[in-house]
Length: 435
Image (cartoon, rainbow, N blue to C red; front, side, top):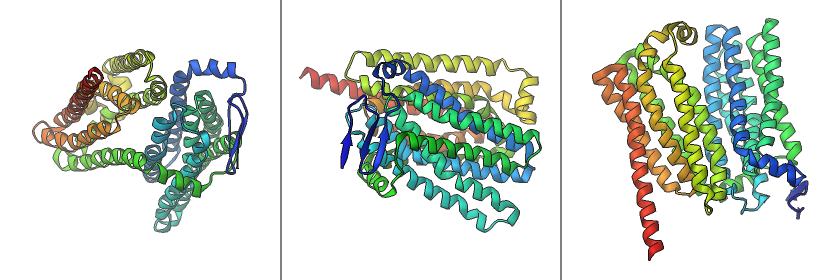
């Protein structure tokens, strides 16, 4: 049974899964729509903020060994979050932002997220069965957090593709503000690291419950599995891109150790940390502008919005890079400690890397919006190859500096390949139009 209200209505019921609209007043909704990209960017910042705070606070109160295990468990959770975004989030953004598809698919997408979260929960839980008793609670907590965190994230994507970025921001504020307040409070009173983690995860649970109540219904894993099967072509493509890039990056860091030593890898990671806020910013801009470009790709607004996005990315890069290049030793040591001395020497190389990353992000935005997903896959596959090969080759001759230039060269070459493919596509399109 399908009971659908009109566009300004409050609720639609689709095979037992309710999807509520966040704004019943069309004028209010149009007002939010005008600023949707900025709301999406702000939402991404808030979303990353709680993650940063929990890591910092756990590092502050936990013993070194515990923090090491937490770092591994946290990395596993973030990895599965990335898998879900590739399988579900990217598909939602690319194929549902235009609004031509029925909203009936959005409920099952949350069911697919539940399936991913359950799988992540079971895999993260495995170490609890083999580790000493004092370490088990950490892994149980992180495993239990997988389902609410992944569902909450998919709810954010549903809000964004439905032009309700303000609702996505509210979802994250419901998680972030009480969680940060609670975590800081228990740290002040000397609570254990497990308490900090538990409060962070409860915040995610509350946000998920609020989102499900707001959007109605309970995630249905069977409907979710059908949704994934229906979108398997795009989902597997996006997951493949995510997988090859992550595997190549992981492998190259391991292979660099015998070439430049742990200290050299530490210097590279330290320099990477200095520029890591740009990754968050670029991803936020990408998520914010792709839905808008998809909606305007048949209009004259497309080029204007694309130019605005490119200028925005460039401005963010210039501002942050100047800040990092002017960073003095006192502040650098405060951020990186002893790693600063070596990492600071690699700032120019990483600046060059992020120049290319601006162009790479613009191309990826174009490929997702037009769409040219096969071209995007080709560009990202070449990036994975270059990332795996070039840093290793240059590191043999120039050490950590060579590895840094290798990462930069990999992005630059992948941009050249992507640009050539896009120019060829435009040329073919013009020829077919002229004919």
